[in-house]
Length: 379
Image 1 (cartoon, helix red, strand yellow):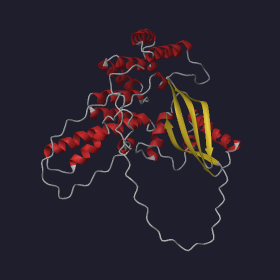
Image 2 (image 1 turned 120 degrees about the vertical axis):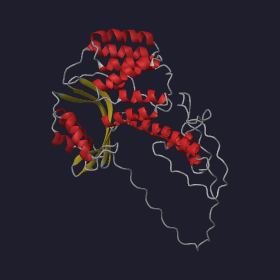
Image 3 (image 1 turned 90 degrees about the horizontal axis):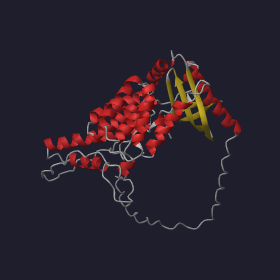
Image 4 (image 1 turned 90 degrees about the vertical axis):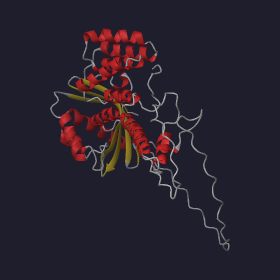
């Protein structure tokens, strides 16, 4: 993908057609020509031939104007050629025609953030996360938007009360999130922990009442070349504590080294695979009792959503579809004692919607059953 005019170092775009690629489902192959055209337009975009990619996309959409994958690709091309208004219109229309897809919401948010419209960016990202609470890219972008909004609020507070000594340190901490680092620098601790807000510093006790400097305007979005700030050098370790020498005693024999953990048995791997494929089959069969039972009691839907609300939302999304197919490809399973991880490509088809994405399930054994404790997209 050629370098975009938007700042991709901080706010992250959804992938191109790879996040929405049409694939086989219900035992039937999708039209080879359509899939080939998606791939060809994507290839042209990756090689920087945007004009040619747009020509092919427009030609394809003349015959299939509702194709979500090609419309998404066209929006990305418009974005990369500086046609932001057209890209906004394309992604906005996709959110209306295919509200199940979080990627158009995410890309709208990135555009809004680049224009310092952080309230609109926040609203779009919250819509993306409601659609898919496990969408890590949108969760990260939402954290960055909150940081930008905090920077604006602290700057305004300082303008209104320049004698407030507690605000300036907070503003300084927020700004380090978006400060470029020297070449070769490493992320600072603040940047590395950007997913969780840093604790507010305590007010300075008995500080002299000197007016604080006039704050700079809220930082502009970071350019793609920007890197996180370098980490401060670690403090020198304290001198060792002197301990009085005790009378010598007979040496205690060293404890034997623990035996290496046994490799997971093939039966455990087979049990996990059976659980994963059973979960997919229950989903495709709209068997909600079996589908929901695949999730353990400690499963957290994410996004602050309760288990009850998540179950109701899943029922509304699954039950009533004329047909659902959930195919699993390239399944890789790792087992560590009573825990397991399953990574695979999920090809989902429901009515006219087709989505291919990477999926990770973390499972936990309970008795002789494996249950899903965490579900995420991507990776």
